[in-house]
Image (tube, rainbow, N blue to C red; front, top):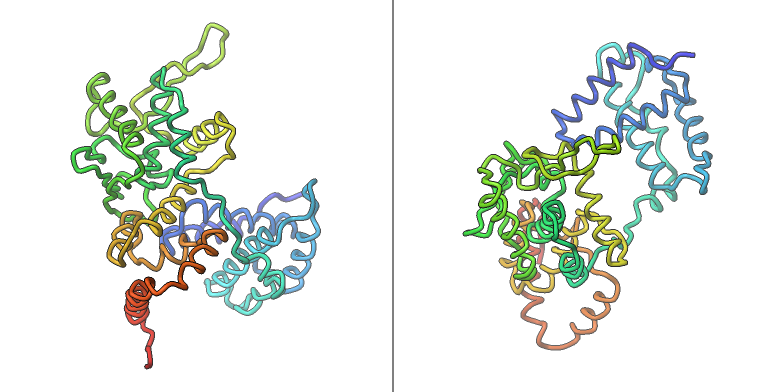
Length: 365
């Protein structure tokens, strides 16, 4: 029973390079595409992609949608992601040398879900976002008796202060944080940022107690550890063989984490310790956007807040993160009945009009 096809492997390697280098997708996005293609290959018995026909796509959709995971059928979102990845792959493949005469661009359309299932899969659902008070409580409750515990507490505090993604947190160096300016320079040459974009984040106003946690940690590394600018801001855990012949955490070593998994484990343990549901590091970015919506008093304020999150366009903050939860939505709508909101409405309308014009829309009176 074959478990791969040499020609397919070469085509996939070129496609993954295309996604990474030309489309600038992240490793996670490429991994999702690779998984979708692997599932399709396994279903077809690793047949040559040149032998692809629309019946394969239709049969695979039916088979994959009927799979039982043990807790029920696969979600519409999983189906949509898998089929969309396959559609994009075969569309790309149809234009490649050696495949142009075998495949047509429109063949990939047979991977589409029904319009109804697509609406279900792509429906916007409320995100699980912690409140500022919850995160402050988590940080205040975290132990700081050992060096490892102090690091873990500083990781959570830093994520709240900067809104940095977990990849950036794992790769940051001491030199990237300027305590005097209260800023974090996300230098894409060394820090793993989205789309390899460099930008400066100034500490968000989330409480002086939280900021002091970070200051205490950096002071410890520089004064007590005597670490320099190029050492990691959050060093990896040092593992040594203990008396029971098992590896044990015995301290820190001056090297970066290889990935973001340890950061997510820190978050999970911190929230569980105070009987709160787990919120991942990225949820803090949503928290900060909601905080900005409440505190920013002008379009310029919100633009600065948006740039602090690394967004070049303020509409990215509005459309990708700026969802107002249902309770807050009702409160705001009811409050807009007063006359005092007219000036704010006018200013907001002008701002949105300006951005629409910049995007190429023509506004008529």
